[in-house]
Length: 442
Image (tube, rainbow, N blue to C red; front, side, top):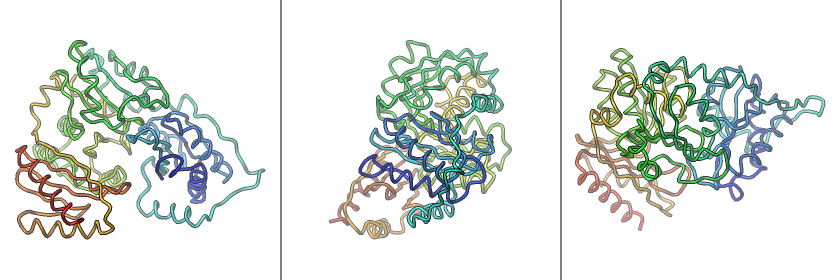
């Protein structure tokens, strides 16, 4: 459940959502964690009171990253969790994200069951004698998370490389653990926007324009990398050692090129339907198989689990590997730093080995009630000239690139991505699709 706090997401809605979660009868305590937005404390109070009023044992985790939530729920043998976070959204937004007992997102059927209970208001409440007070998360549990990271990263190699790294935490959850992260990896951390507060100092979505503010300090500091996170550390953008801010589309390909060296040919990798073709090329280079899901973290993780894939990620600056059941910024950062240390090659050098595509991303507002009909018509307009997939919106594939058109699930927007090795072709296809879309909407 997400929305703008006040007109969309209210304390009452948060109470009902948590009551619906509790009514599904999680088998064990429920972990609650937050991204420290201005509205998060209000929503946390609503969620915790509703869960305890429904008879749940609640572990109040306070400020936690998304990756910590994904790890801690199964580690604590909890019945599930609720992460309160606006992620990459602007200041007025927030969301309640339900997580299952394995720490991953609810499967589609479980999501529908949750919202059926929510809309029907068939909540379970208990008498006062059955209410259990919430308990704080034990420090030892957070220690176990750092041990998990150490077990899945070559921390000795990273420490031996003596890397200086600039990290922009956007004043979010990661800022609370910045020092511990640096100590674990033995890096010289230059932390930016590292106050744990509701003040959001920049666009929280990691992409070149939010990475640009730190680019000027990378070379003077002799930094190996600049890492830019969203508020809950589920997304990460990268600035190279030369100060080049990279598209969020390249975070996963950079990591995959290193990660797949340790897996046998034929291993599966998952991404969504509109991620960069660079990933297709890298996975093929390593003799592995790329599978594609609908857009959304939950869809990617579901397919990773179903296929036993070795890694999964999206073009939003997110990926996961190993036993972690969600996108974890500290794990992502650690793997990229490990690649620098083990390969003894700077990010700029590793970037030169990646296939590069030119990407055009646009969002097009619409007010037509016939948007899906317009999408069908647009498919006809392109005719039989290209291969087309309708797994999630429309995706047209040419030998040199693709065009993706997808209706947003949260706003009245058409999301357009055009990619090609030829920048003129990428722009021309985006222009053509937009022109047709706007003509059909008249």
